Length: 239
Image (cartoon, rainbow, N blue to C red; front, side, top):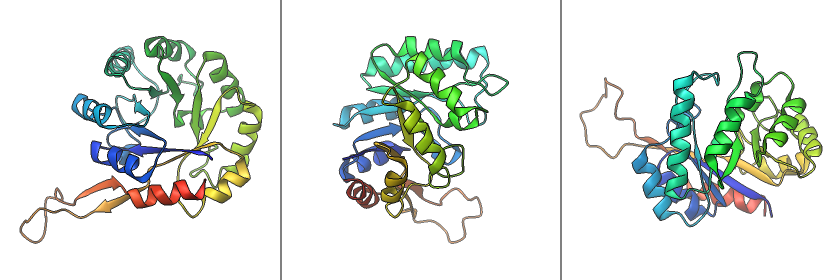
């Protein structure tokens, strides 16, 4: 049976992922922008309520992955905070101006993580030479890398992912992510031989607010949340 990690953008989404049978949660905020570090309150409540492993995205802002010193320091503080709360792991990544893995910064992240697991996120898909970068991540000690094979979706990057998984040889987990649904995950598993998959399993919820018709401010459109039914379908498809 393969492992399903769900990207959850809130406490409610994290609990919905667990309800649907997810094996691990990656907790973040602002999922529509690619995800950033969630708040202390979100982290604390998720950690208290989840029975499955909790990984936390450490990303101080949307945009690229070239970080200034102050941003790196903030990320290290966030990693330490996750460790103190008893989280199971963190999801990090940093690149140089040339788009290579920033080994010095990543070494600091891994040191701050201590005994927590450490995943390298989809910044990996921006590097110019992914096979070489994979070896760098192995040498640094990452346990996992999230990737779409450098393509907009994991399905379109399946051939690249299959080569990376073969190269990894169980030294690091290559986890496909981006655009994964119950309809395509089984064929993606067959094409790549991946053992872990990453999906948001989300749907849009309408707002329950009673407000005047015509929201001219655009501030009452409801929320995006993980759907337990989609999670269950994903888990069933990779069982």
